[in-house]
Structure formats: C-alpha cells, structure tokens
Image (cartoon, rainbow, N blue to C red; front, side, top):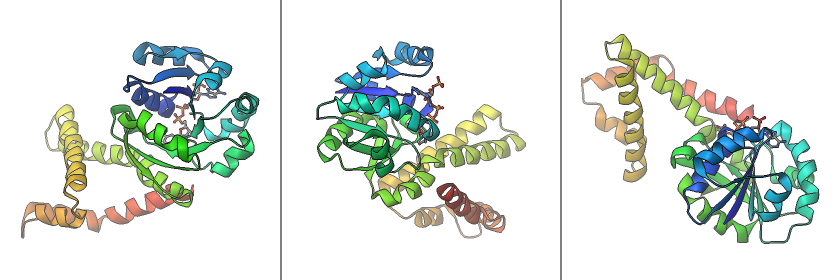
Length: 255
Ligand SMILES: NC(=O)c1ccc[n+]([C@@H]2O[C@H](COP(=O)([O-])OP(=O)(O)OC[C@H]3O[C@@H](n4cnc5c(N)ncnc54)[C@H](OP(=O)(O)O)[C@@H]3O)[C@@H](O)[C@H]2O)c1
C-alpha cells in the first residue's frame, strides 16, 4: 500500500516506522523541515517528497502535525485532495479534532481518525480508531498491522481512550522512574533498577492481556497474607495512588 506521512515528528515518525515493517508498503515522507524526513528515510527507507506528490500517490494520507497547525496544513491539502480519486483515506492522529472538524477543513473525503501512542515505535502501540471510511478501514488495519493492537471505538469515546492509552505512556514513564529511584535509593544501579521496573511492567501487562484475569485478582495473587507486598499496597493507598491516577486521566481527558 502507498502511504504518505505528512509531519514526521514523534508520532508520525513512529507510525511511519511501523508501516515500514510491512514490506508491501511504499512510504512517502513530508515534513516542514525536510531534513527531519530525510533522517527518517535513511532509517526506514521510502521517499522524501512534497505535498502534491504525497497526496497524488498515497492511498492513506497520515496527518502528523500538531492540532494547531492543522488548519494551515489543510488549506494546502484541500485542493490536492479534491483532485484525488477513491479509494483513499485521510488518517488524522490530531488529539481532540473530530471527524466533522476535519471535514470542514479538508472537504468531503474518506476519513479515519486515530489515537495512537508512542509504543507504536516498537510495534506495541495501542491505536484507537474511528471514522466512516469503511472500505479503506480494512486496508488501513492491514497496512499498519505491525504498529500494535487496534480498537475501534465510537468517536465520543476517543478523548477518554486518548487519556488512558495516548497519555498513558508518560504516566508509566513517571512510574518507572519512581520505581527506579526507589531501587537506586536501596542500592541498585540506575541501569539495573530501570530494567527491573520496565520489564516488570511489560510482564505484568502481558499477564493481564494474556490471562484475561481482572487486575485485582492478579494483585491478590502477589499479596500473601502478612507478607511484604500488601504492606506496599497499604502505603500506596495511604498516599492516594489510585485516586492520583484516576484524577490524572480525567484531567488529561478534559484538557
Ligand atoms: N506524541 C504523542 O504521544 C501523541 C499521541 C497521540 C496523538 N498525537 C498527535 O500526533 C500529532 C503530532 O504530535 P507529535 O507529538 O508527533 O508532534 P511533533 O513531534 O512536534 O511532530 C509534528 C511534526 O509536524 C511537522 N510539521 C509541522 N508543520 C508542518 C507542515 N505544515 N507540513 C509538514 N510538516 C509539518 C513538524 O516539523 P518541524 O519539526 O520541521 O517543525 C514535526 O516534525 C498531534 O496531532 C498529536 O495530537 C501525539
């Protein structure tokens, strides 16, 4: 599949990396400062190009710019998209920008709105998607299948999903850093403490997903009566860990 990435920053770049793992994909990269797209091309292949060629060639056109830049970019893309024949879809990853708004900016073309996260870069992303480009959706899922796990949600739930899985990596990074700090305070090297924390989270996440068991049940299995782990759980509850996480996600959703 021919895929254009317009805006090859953190998220656009991560999605382009994922797309490049599918041998059949042909990648077009466009960025305001082309040297950034060129650096990515050296890493993943494809072609650095301009808006006109990207839109003309691609069957999926990813928009990877920040939401405030979107109106200006769409003004440039709108006439190019008007010329374009189906099948194709515009894929927007812009946080908080609904399909209806994209349509105002770009005109009436097939749209897929996604909410990815940075673990896409290592093929373990969580990608929420919504939209009305039914025919192109299957092709999109196939072309991007090395990006991670996909979940289709109603558009009204995109912001809630974004706050959990889009912002979540930053929350987990804070948690890993705090665990690592505690390890260092207790005598572990920084490197070892960070590996212990990150691998533990990777394993715990896989256990939840692969066992299908409720996290509370898995937590109970680690907390022996009178043991050490339940004392840690008691301290986390005392310090408001759960409430802090819930409030963080809701604040992100409402921002
Ligand atoms: N980061 C995340 O975890 C995350 C998660 C979910 C969704 N998103 C969404 O992903 C989008 C991008 O965010 P980001 O974090 O990847 O931002 P970013 O790293 O700043 O990337 C934005 C890229 O767009 C380029 N750009 C700006 N204006 C352009 C234009 N007119 N034409 C072509 N390229 C242009 C920038 O190029 P220059 O550097 O040359 O200016 C930059 O490479 C946002 O809409 C955000 O809501 C991000």
